[in-house]
Image (cartoon, rainbow, N blue to C red; front, side, top):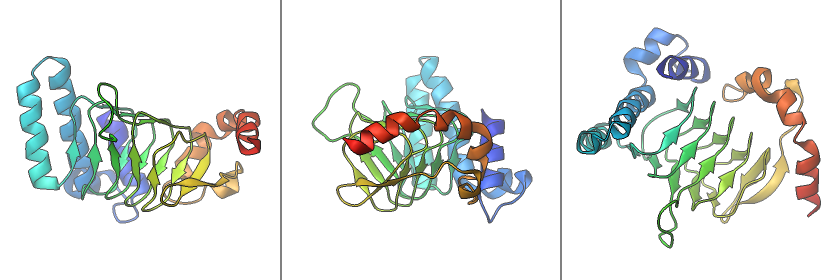
Length: 204
């Protein structure tokens, strides 16, 4: 898992470029590695130590990532400033999380109360997703948007409250940015199979 996070940090950050620089200086990667250690401690029922590690990371990096949350492979955390990920949140593979992102609860739910983010999602600066809601494969939450309702696959969400502005273009030439270039190779053919469902949602 950590190896895939290093690859994500070095390939998606325009200021890093090589893996060694990411390991030495990329604070998002440092916080992510600490989360993975804390998550293993949590799974081993060493919750006190996991909480201690979480609080230490929060003080040093200004990121509050609960050790019980589940995060997949190849996560890119661009920087740690203001990032909050709640206890029951689930983050899929190859997700990009930029500064100030919140995956939180509404304050009205108990138990399983945080978002479920699918593969290849991009959460841009200051994006907020609240409640036990799904964020579908390949979706993009634009900067400063606040999402409180389920997000269909491949949707581009914007606004407060966030609404569907459009859907991602499933053509290889559209996947050229630092945060999306890697997605075409892994997911383009798979996501094309979602098109009928996306069209049904758009019609609705």
